[in-house]
Length: 451
Image (cartoon, rainbow, N blue to C red; front, side, top):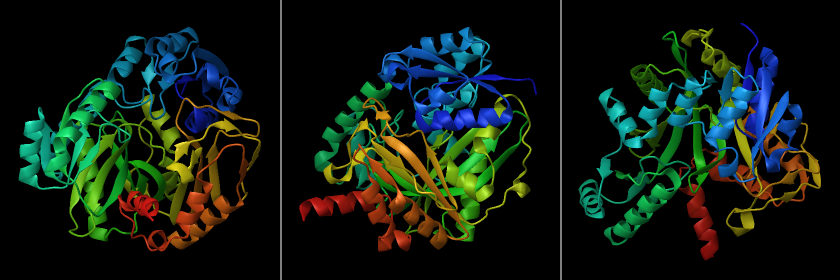
């Protein structure tokens, strides 16, 4: 393959991860940064750096004309959007194509189909993948009628939402109208569309997702599953792979459902098909498809030995998949901890600041994906993620033990982090015995506040 020049349209650890993958492939890199990120570690590693605009995301990382102009002006052949920011924007993918740039991700029509959770849900139903009872609503009265029909509790969800914004849980009729109106207004403000739908809330659920990968030649595979049940306000904190709570039969069903959806879309690139598994009833319900690389992709890399970002880049440039389904093997277990600049003593409030001391612990079997360094000024404008600590072992017990050693040995000063919370969680019986469900941590915090 001819040498490519890739514009990295992201920041933080994922920008560094993309630059590393490009370096290994012999691709040149240009990094677009905000004014706040000019001295970041990715900026020091990229072949060239272009300042897109001011420190706020709207002035830089979300400034579509500035990103495309910078990529064209620096002679890039492709744009890798990472996750978040522009990674799921169908209009951005189309603009890349119009300017002769390869968008490292799915085709625009696939992004369009998946960007609306209602249409994605209909697609799943059309190919025989189960979804939770519910549907779209246009008024609060419609929402109330539907909720009565499917039964409380329910979730009011933004059709174009993400990251928990525009999502409200409602336990009875009393709060439904207010929750519907608030979710609709939040969705309109955050995503430009106030469309919402109602679905039954599963009280005791595991959040399980299947990694898929497809090329432009009709080849598609899955790379096993991940469990992401440990969440707070719909933000994942600890992820692992594979999901040991699944039976072999449930695992086969999940993988099959994910590939059905990928086939129906003629899916190209990396993607993740997300499900809820009802631990009491055994039901599996489709949630959504995330058409991009995920924050938690390293646990899949750890158990399969596949460099997912490398494969994503290659299929974007038209290369056929080298892997077939029979080539995918699961080796051991992996756990990922998300270290964040958040204060667990104050509801995980963001805690930006300058790192005065940063010493990751060198533990065998542990990978650190981070853009931190001593003296780094952690900015207040973006996500609070500082590092991903990925521990791999021959089994879950060994992976958890390595994760404990890694987080216990970390020395960090200057920012308040969630290190103490991660240490506490790893010693909690519910996590050790894998009985955690998606509501567990939120309920635990609520109990501690009432105590």
